[in-house]
Image (cartoon, rainbow, N blue to C red; front, side, top):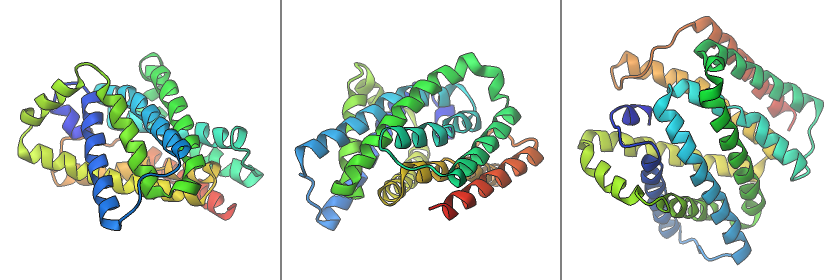
Length: 274
């Protein structure tokens, strides 16, 4: 995603629409292949469309930040969802939260702080943090709606209707469709192939996230999922090592190692608290 945005000046939100369309197509293929019935209770459809719509609204800001800042900075700020979504699960859904869970989440948050200081995120508060607070609020509401609908809809159907809601919202911006037509011809086949490969990977991640949300409380599942900056650092290293894409260099490895230990310790405590 970051590599593709670096090669274009067309704006980030149109890539969210591109991603939504590809994800929706993947959802249609799976529904047809697995012979799933997409028409479920109207209330559930409304919740899932609303969840996707909120996610679509958040993507305007998320892709803007991804286009303007480094991928690691944006993702580390986004990892604060490990705090906001569990709080939404506790106060809105009435999920229980034990001392062990609190310690696990605390270690993960501490790891995020270590990484953020390392990347200089705290020096750009006015530029990135305020938009990210709004994005995190939208994500939290989106996760709560998904959690409420998943028990009855199943994660494959939830994926389809939420992606449809996302595409509808992103198509609502007046110039989006014309921009989408532009980027189709703007990028080379190799760039399109790379981006679609990334979207297939993210689609798998979304399915696994929905499956996790369906089987665990938000206050447990979300902090674990929010530790993906560890994976990002590894992928970034491989991308640079083999010249796959132009990605910013990784510095201060000892801080990153410390943050990884905090992340893994937090995940271990959370999993033992289930």
